[in-house]
Structures are given as structure tokens and as C-alpha cells.
Image 1 (cartoon, rainbow, N blue to C red):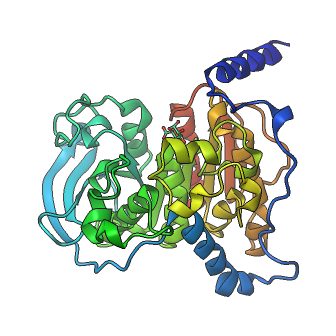
Image 2: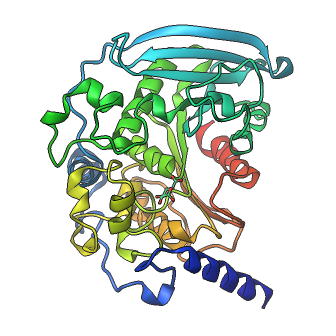
Length: 400
Ligand code: GCU
């Protein structure tokens, strides 16, 4: 009874805060049929050779946008190095990557923290942050980032840095605005404007999520060359809009060893056809720059999308993927996130791996799955210690 009451309260408060026309009521979810992952009789080889690329191309053209040909002459400058970081248990290295090899172009400033006691290269989490590298830990040794309004360590609770180091892994992060500021500015600034004139853009040109994703791959290029890190064990991590980004990064760059998508919601792991919480129409109104223009046409026409988000999760197969929801984050549609993880399962099976392994949503704070994992954490839209405990286990069991 108590848990029923709690659920009612959560749903009602989410409902009150929702803009007109949007809902978080299961009874209002329309009937829908999900597009098939693959035609009957598809072999693992057919998927790997043709169908995967076809699915990826659809997401590119209709949702995230196509990245133009960019000559990759990025130059790297090693910055601050601290060999006794975190009281001696970690090595800190800052690195600045000129993304276009042009002093005036955007620079990705990576903060790399690895365990000092490591006997060899370590697996790492690579994730963009919202407010600057200095917000992920309170240490004054971290260079103050662009957004100086944010205080040191302001977002430390979301990063669990010391817990990651104590477990023998590294953490690599950069401010997402280094690649593209999160503004609807006609793609004049950031990587888009620097790589291509805005006049050349068309309805399938890349949006901000594709820009952030491209930047993550440039971070990975460097990590492959950086000795303390095992470049074949880089797991891309992201929360919320950056959880949408981590899924797309895992889909577009198969060098990522795994993907963690925390509370990613609409445009991330949540199925668009459920139209529960944030919808395609709504996201394209509030954040028109995140996706390509073609995606805008699917507002209130989710049924016409040539895919749904279970196929985005499927693009990560056979690599490990973690989709995480929060019970108080109804805007992101936890059930839709669960269903996308579940319905990606057949691809994992086709490729010899285990999907979620159960059809029903697990209880709150119960982690489930094989190579595809899922949990519904209690509490709000956020990244908490509970989430990190599961991600560390994911690292231990599937990556290390
Ligand atoms: C908004 C947006 C979500 C997004 C979130 C975030 O709530 O509607 O789609 O995930 O911001 O990134 O914080």
C-alpha cells in the first residue's frame, strides 16, 4: 500500500509540472507497433554486414544528422600533470585537443584521472560534463573551466571520482560546450560553424548531439595513444541529454567498448512511440538544435518514424550497454527506457549475447540484465552513488 501511495504522489507531482498536452499516464499511451529490428531469417552476418549500417544511416539522416567530411588534423597539447593527485592515489593529466588543428577552432579540454597504483593501462569511463571539469571534484588542482560561474566540485556528487579510482578505473571528462555550446544559434559557433559554413547545411545536417558525439570520438582518439589508459576499454557515459549523446556515440563509433546512458529519456533510450512525458514534438520545440531538421517532421507523428529507440540500443550490440532510469523522472519515461533496452535483446541474442533476460520491469533499485543492463533507481533525475555502484559492477563484469 505504501509503495502504491508513493507512486501516486510521484505521478501526480510530475503531472502537475507538465506543460499542456503532455502526460505521464500509462492509460494515455497510444497503441503502437515497434519497427522490427531485422527481418525474419536474418543471420548475425547479415546484421553485421548490411543491416546494422542501414539502421545507423536511418538514424543519421532522420534524427541526429550527418557529420560532414572533416579533415582530422586535431593537434594535442599536454597540459597540467599531477602525479600525486587525490592524496597520492591518482594521476591527473590535462590535455587540450584543437579539434580542427586550428588554433582558433574549438578545443576539447580533457581531464584524465587514473589510479596511481595501476600496474598497466586501465579501463576508463569517458563522459562529457555540463559545467566544466572543475565541477567534477573540489580539488584546486583541476584547471578552472569555461563556465566560471559554476563552483569547484559543484557536480562532484554526480561523478563519484574517488570511488572510480579506488576500484581501479579511470575517469575522463570534458565540458560539452567545448565542442558546441548548447544554444540554438543557427550552428554558427562551436564545431558546426568551424567545420562547415552554416549556409551549406540541409535538413539532414548534424545537430548538437551529433557534434558532442563527434567530440567524444576525438577524445577517444587521444585515449588510444595515452599509456595509462587501455584504449580498447573506454566506456562512454552520459546523463540526460548527454545520455542521449552516449548512446549515439556508442552507435557511431564501435571503438567504444561499452555505453552507459543515465536517465536519457526522449531522443535517448525512451521509445518515441509511447509519447509519454517528453515527446518528439516537445523536444524539437524546446531544443531544436539537438537533432537534424528532418527529425522535426515527426512531432505528433511518431508512428511515421522509420525506427524507434530500441534500435538505437541495438546499434551498440554486441557490446555491453547500460540503460538506467529514475522513478521520479517520469519526464524521461522510465518504462519507455526499459522497453527499448528489452526490445534490443533479439540483436544481442543473434550475436550470441544475453539481453535483459526478463520481460517485466524490475523492482525499484534492482539491477538486472546480461550484456544489456537496466535499473530503475528510487529518487529523481540525477546520477547517484547507487547508479555508480551498478556502473562499476558493469565495468568489473563486462569490460575489465
Ligand atoms: C530537459 C530535456 C530532456 C533532457 C534534460 C537534460 O529536461 O527535456 O530531454 O534530457 O533536459 O539534459 O537535463
